[in-house]
Amino acid sequence: MSERNLDFDTVIQREGTKCLKYDFKKQRGLPEDVLPLWVADMDFRTSSYIEDAIISQAQHGIYGYTEVDDEYRAAVGRWVLDHYGWNVRPEWFNKSPGVVFAIACAVRAFTQEGDAVIVNQPVYYPFSEVIRDNGRVVVSSDLKNDGEGYYSIDFDDLEKKIEEENVKMYLLCSPHNPVGRVWDPEELRRIGEICRRHGVIVFSDEIHADFTWGKKFTTFALAGEDFGDFSITAYAPSKTFNIAGLQISNIYIPDRGLRRRFRHEYNASGFSQLCAPGIAAGLAACEKGGEWLDAVRAYIDANLDFAVSFVSERLPGVKLRKPEGTYLLWLDFRDLGLSAEELEDLIIHRAKLWLDSGSIFGAAGEGFQRINAACPRSTLKEALERIEKALQSAE
Image: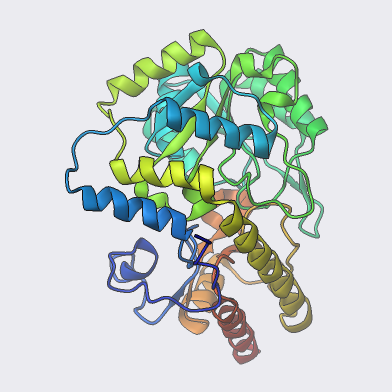
């Protein structure tokens, strides 16, 4: 049997499937005619091997409690070793229905109400939501933008804020969503040294690790000899294989004490077994998903190049730098001099697009829009052409 689902050009109808991305425009306050490129799932069918595994699971006809076992842990461990170079131990493994769920558990496990948790804004907005919703304080050491879309960490500011705010935990986005940085080993080493010096626990969200473009990914735990002693690392097949709806993520915690505290909080949440289709899909992804992943990566890489060229040639006043990682585009509209309301009107009502407004990623994201490029080329082209026409009509 060979991989069947390698056609990424065909536009697949997602309306009417209870799809968050397409079917909830009205409920989210958007016009019905907007083209959605916001939430980070792909408009591609997943690997046919994953489809087959789910069909086989469904045909069994009994949908009782299921659990991850040694076979699953071993398969995920091989994936982590082969793709990220980390030789993880089975006892480090922790299941979770999602990375954000695991972050929430970690925030409750390793901090108290009123404690400060630090992030690097603009950053994936559930980070701040989870911190605030659990009664903790969001502290941001904003990333530095060189003006051309290249972001870096302000290490002096990071350490200063950790000291001044008595920060207990650091949520690291690696690769970074939405700015697309793949952190260098030296950058990760400096982060780790600062956090070790001040007793800060690091939660490294590495869900986009399989999508890097011309840059080698380094997992945080390998950036320093003892970094695994004070860190939690999250991976998931959900972004990699477009199976977020199946709710399965893989969390690694090498330190026994941290692992015990995390598992206590996880158990206290009341969540227990993962869903059977998710386990079947995750296993199939690790064992047979390589061909599909290679093909979808090549397609997305070409999409990113197409978008960069289009913006450079046809969207005057808009800046876009090709991301080093993720399949997300971070469009900079600031040179147009539009207010936040004017930019939203341009995107939603003139271009008829549903994107992620940069402001939801923190104040440092104001003036930006995030576009999901994991879609057929024709869809991406249409979205960019809509922006082009909207800009022309506004002149």
